[in-house]
Length: 192
Image 1 (cartoon, rainbow, N blue to C red):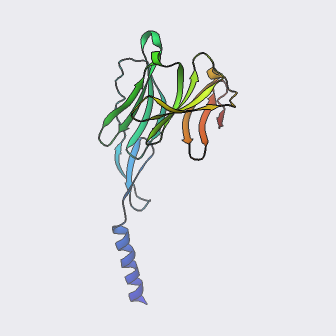
Image 2: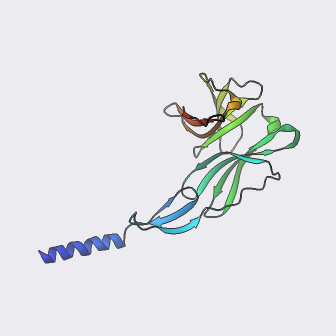
Image 3: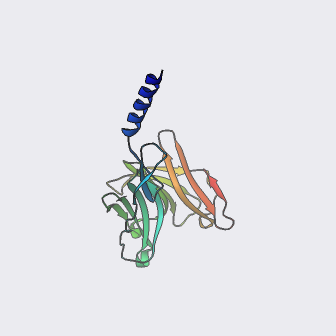
């Protein structure tokens, strides 16, 4: 019986030694572990935001694609026309920012409130500049700003100026949309 116990312990130890190492992230740091108990810090995800030539830059959407890659939608002031929308993929392992494309404010009759990156497509939540009651989800490829599909959100009773919108998720296959809004006045959060 002792020989069997010792053999079992030796096998268990050998599996722990050769356990697959996995990397995890909390969105700003990366750790490596093989036993989900001991974590070895690898590095922090620190990559300079792209220089857009103005101090008036805001992140509208941030999405973790995987451990080392993030999708960003930024807007930047552009003089008389308002804001241009810049879509980036940032790779923290290689320390690179890749611009997918820029949508110029002067060419756009809608404001983009949030975006979702799906690997092949970019979905945007958009509101016409002259009418706050209509909301649209637009679908573009990652290679072009041309809208290839558009969905109108029929039931939407939220005032444009009263809410912040972020964390959008589109599940086109199951005809679902999820995004989080918060009220500026009393910080309520709702999910749709």
